[in-house]
Length: 474
Image 1 (tube, rainbow, N blue to C red):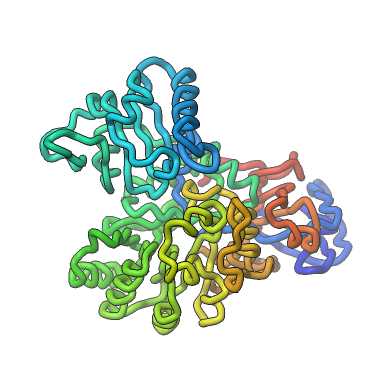
Image 2: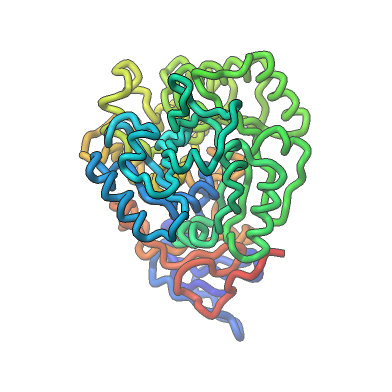
């Protein structure tokens, strides 16, 4: 395949792909016999984007769910209408799954309030934090919890509130994992050729599931999959890399420090880095203390760093830890943060430039489905730091468009490291925009991807329609 007249790092060039690699870049390259030609017409050609932190199966499940929170649902009346509309579309007896609930919509929910909204069918709604499920009485009846179930009780009665117990719920539901086909194609349409799935309970079955989805042609992106200690001795699969040991820290239920340190050391002994979910100041303090004791190594990383005051940023830099964060939270939840986050923490919320200025390697991601699975929207949020209601949060943390793009161009194993570039010999993971970079940088959220290739095969877009279509991964 020959892509002609593409803007590559500011210059108009042609780029040739042979198999899964870029083999030549130059001016006015001569087409070969039977070579597919793609006319870029001066549009920017970039390396394929890598989303460094998302949750594939949760994203697939969310796309088949009804949204129960902002911005789509703003109040109790809107929630009731959304549930009733979804109810009419489902077969009798099917579960209704909601996502994204926030107390600002209709206050605290429990089984009784859900019964008043929808008593006819099993209903489960996930809080937007991802930590809490809300169940109505029909759902509780089908789940048939025993006395040891991790459900909240009040006066000896189940409230329908289930905290941090996804494994229990998954086992009770016995549901098959959702197809990844639709979400994979959505990601490809936005130029994403690789993802890091950061689901903390991924084990060998999850790695095998991702590999099988790739073999079927269902999953188009290369995957790096984090998970728990069961992956310490696991091997990579076809197109699926074993990723870091993910520690999903919760401020109100932190593990004993000595146990956490021992777990870090065990994963390090298996040549595996460790990643730490840190959305509060306390969680970040705890993670850094554990890494200081265990000893940090290449591959360790901090996820979110949602609240990072200067003294903790300095510790992150001293430990040479990269940070993977999500500017999209500022855009989607910034108005809530202004109401709910302590005033002392607001200046340090989802920082960006402050990390770079301190010498901390920085990568960006979407954390989909907890923000939109759109890296271009995340880049826009990194540049303007503007909430849905146009409030600006921490403009001094804003990035340039080039820095925001760079957040999605580091290799999966080294977020914030040396950027992937279009060079002969590099993987043919490519993203052709619908405009020049000068036009794109002015309105990142409006960028559309004309075509996307992974390993030289078209995974999205109309350019080169007769060229390498995705085949089952070998």
